[in-house]
Length: 78
Image (cartoon, rainbow, N blue to C red; front, side):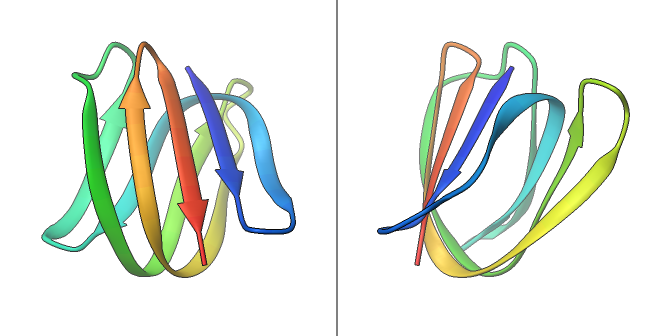
């Protein structure tokens, strides 16, 4: 699955991941391979993800939106 984390002026992360956990406005949720399509708002917190080699990383955000569709997770943060 591909994860793209972008801000208005920078690409924060672009790569293949096995899972991503996001701080949704209605609670934290995890996206795995073949997840159903969704669009959600995000609150401040940490986007945690595991890359294809098993390395876990995190990116702190103050809010944003996420679109999940066809194994592409696109996160726009501010």
